[in-house]
Length: 261
Image (cartoon, rainbow, N blue to C red):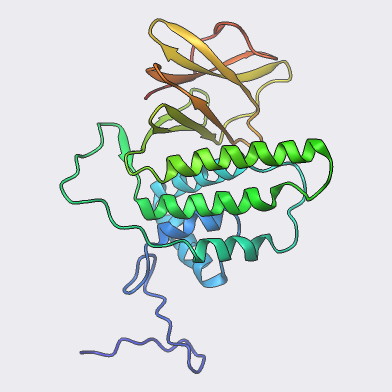
């Protein structure tokens, strides 16, 4: 057997960095995307992910999805000291999940099933964010926000762990990438690179139910990203329109995107 240990220039450092993302002996660099979205990777892993992002458009889209999921659980307060260490610890302790059984049916056209290991990492990161996102305080409002975020995080973590979960993707008219994570009757809609709505306008999410549209709420694309978790029993898809500020009972403009779920 040929000894392929690389000389890193530091005595005793025999870690194989590989020739690029996914090099010999390396874990799938996509498993690092969730932690990368939180700036919770070390310098070596950051270089691995950076190389992946320069060559793989799918990885860049997946990173946007991770950032949108994390954004759904955060609040507008400075991150507390130790966030990075807590996230790294949570991700490091996430158990390896068995691969999907051979022979399982392929996802329907236009959809992609996600590897369980990668979903487990995302769920761990989301849980770590929620655990520290709301400052410790005796204020009733803060406690209620903590409960709301934790409840939402638990629901999303359950979806992410579902081996039958599927992703539907589409491009928004006017710019932006939309995706819907579908698990049972729940849909996690997320969008990235979305232009800011006008001062008197809001983006509104709709559930497509037969020949009618049911509002699932308005949303603000903070920094171009947003994520909404909705119960979608009986719906055939989700759609987004641009509406007057505050939203409308029914769409007043053509959909910017429609994702069949």
